[in-house]
Each structure stands twice: as C-alpha cells, then as structure tokens.
Length: 400
Ligand SMILES: Cc1ncc(COP(=O)(O)O)c(C=O)c1O
Image (tube, rainbow, N blue to C red; front, side, top):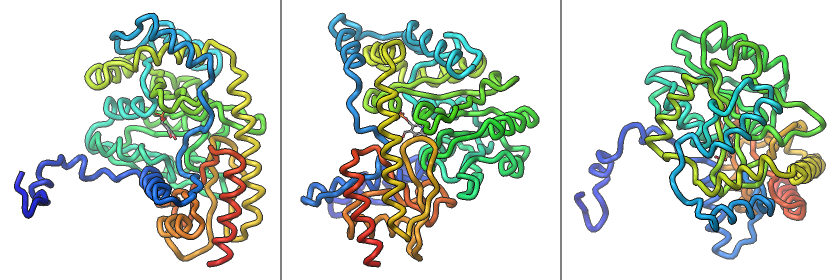
C-alpha cells in the first residue's frame, strides 16, 4: 500500500477491493443506528426507533438450555446442516404449523440472514433477475448484487397495504427472471400477504418455472387473529421454494445468530455447500437453546406478541395526533411505515428528526425507491419510549 502523508492512496485502496463489493450499499438502518450511538455518546437522550430488535430478554428456559449445553461440553463441531434433534423440531413445526411437506432432511440450521445469503448464492447466476418487493428489507438487494444478479423492485403501494401483488410481479417477469422473493409479514411495512396473494404468486412461479425465496422470519408476530400462509405449502410449490425463518424475532434471540431454512433436496444440497464452505454450521451450544425454544413452553411468544400488538396500537393512536404523518394500521412485524408531508427527502427528514426531536428512525428510501417520502418506525421498544418519542416527533413536525 502506498501512503501519501500517512493516508492510504485512495486509488490503490480502490484496486484492492473487489468490484462486487463496490456495488454494495451500506445499510441505511445501521447508518442511523451508528449516528444515534454517536449522539448518545455526546450525552444526547436519543429515543431510538431504528433497529428491528425485540427489547425483551431471551426467555430463561432457552438461556438455561444453552448454559447446560456449555457445561456438558457441547462445544465441538457438528455436521453442517445442524443438530439432528433441532432439525427434527424445525421440520415438525414447519409441517404441523405451516403445512410445509418437509422432514428433517430438508432443514438446514443457520442464521436467518445467512440463510438468505446462502440461498441466493446457491441459486442466482450472474445476470439473472430476482423480483422482490419495494420497499424491502435492506439486505436482499446486496445479496443479489453479491451473486452478480439483478434485483428487480416490484412496487408495493399504500392503497393495497404494501402487499406484494401477483399482478405487479407478473408485469416484471422476463426470460432472465430466476426468483421471486417474498417477505410476509414484511419489514419495513408490516404488511401481511393474503391467501389469494400467496396463491397468485405460487401460480406465477409454477407457470414461469421460478424459484421462490420466502422470508417468514416475522411469521409469529401477527395481529388481530390473522393467519400466516407459507407459499411452500401451496400445491406443487415445495419443490421450488426455500423458506427461511428464525429465532431472533419470535424468541428475542437476535444475538444468538440462529435460524433455519427448509428446502427441497436438490436446493438443500446446493445451499449446504455454501454453508459447508462458509460458516460450517451454526454455533453448537446456541442450537441447544434453539431446541429448547421450539420444544419448550410457548407462553413467552404469546406474551411478547400481545405486547407488540399493544405497542402498535399505541404508536397508531399517537401518530393520529401528528397531521403530517399518514399510515394505515400494519398487520404484522414491529414496524410502522408512515408517509410524511414535506419536500425533504427521507434521509434528510430522518437526520432532521434526529437533530430536532432527538428521535432516531430510518428514512424510507433506504428500503427502495417506493419508500421515498416515508419513515420507518420500529416499535420494538418500551411504551414509555414510544410515548416520549412520538411526543417529540409531534413537536418537531409542528415546528417545521
Ligand atoms: C425481513 C428480515 N429478514 C431476515 C432478517 C434477519 O434475521 P436475523 O437477524 O435473525 O439473521 C431480518 C432482521 O432484521 C429481517 O427484518
């Protein structure tokens, strides 16, 4: 490396970095989280609505199971797909709970984000297109870019609850389309696919011979008695669908880095190769915690979902008092995605609110072009913070 006055030569530094990384954007949610962290370090009392992380502790029986595993020396390598008992438990849950016709041999234990990365690396060729919702979670597009593929945004709209509509997807299918990526309940909009949406998307995948990646990580965080539909359970869909899911959101286990995917055999084998040559397997003792989560009492999940539902209602009630924000009640996950009235772009608006209201949230454009003029508020924080944060937002909008 050549240094000019102690600083690395930027041209040389550029040549060291692979082109595939140069095209990858930094995460908008992480950026706002970092800025909020700096402000907090400066002594500012920032209320954070940025990160999609439950604020609850991991339930005790899950922690105890992982501790016990450590005490018993469960600290060695496993086979890449994961702990057999955990794979069994995931298969049972996927089959009995979601109707996915799988068994343990279809299950790969891996962090959810890794599951998405591995799926895309194992299926998408350079130049192939992946249709995904717009707005969408910030990580999908970079994963497709890393594989050399092209993300094709399918605009979702406020009028149709930000659901990914089959008719929108149909218009985007080309000979290069390889995959449809779906996410219900969704980040950042909290939208939930209807049975008709799932059926329509399944028909498109079958008619055009496409792979489906279904991210169901918020499956359990749904409100008002709504039902979740897994596309892999639709007739003829299991053979072309990889379903990803995980422990982070349902059991407040974000730091455990644990989730799973369920795939038909040929896709499973391909994805498992990426796993073998990247992370080998998910952390051994964490998998014992995961096993306790799935096989132990589920009251903890019910309690957390009830709390999220109350928080959603609280955010919605407080938002009604801010005339510059507009949003219908989301049906799942723990986000609201209001449209705001202002000429400012969404990043500038998020920075303005950080400055004026000392509230950290994410500009909607971080999630895609259709997120412009929106803000994402994560309500995975306690009610006191929600009340304080929304009151500050009200004042900041009044002062504009
Ligand atoms: C839609 C969606 N999918 C996947 C993930 C990744 O989950 P994990 O942190 O368990 O890897 C997230 C995390 O925020 C998410 O919002």
